[in-house]
Image 1: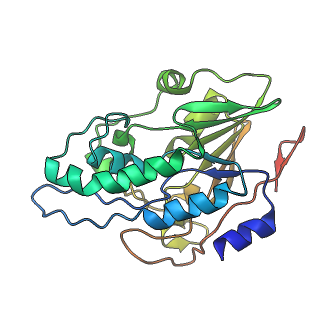
Image 2: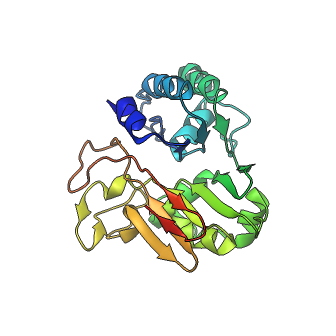
Image 3: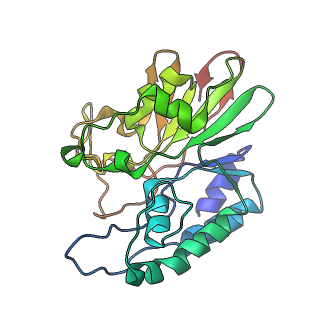
Length: 252
């Protein structure tokens, strides 16, 4: 059904902004049970890759799985015990093998004649619930260190998994920011926004849809699935078809 719908839309290429898989947290003093899910997502990538060019950037779930498996190339070196590494390694290797077939934008860009696509991989501390955080912000110097400076003569599409920092990314030079992460708020309250985000923010309007900021635009996709709570209220699953009209700064 999903692939048939994508075929109907006839996209020029596909952007996947992370959390294509499901990877659960490891909690201290709680027995770890493997409930991670990778195979269906891998199958989807393999099928789509036969038809379309795919550009992929990491979400916190992919990063978490690589951490649990003990892979040294993940953005944050977290050493889990051998029991968790052994459980996670097979699924992490399955994911990495599938991603070899697509263009992974891991704090990197792909350039075309008049536009660039950049994928920003945030350190995992930026996904910590707000009441547990130490006030980490995302200064422009950190963005510059991750992805460099944009070319002023090009249109810039930047994928950053969480929309929390879209203003920072637009200020850095993005014309179009694509995010997800909030699952549309899970429960969406009309005129107010998300009941709650994964960072325990309440009534956040940036949980879905399109918003303007300065000279840039944010589009937040509600996603197709659920995670901890299998609930979606006033929050239909979606895929986004974005048509960019050259020279007009308009999106359909």
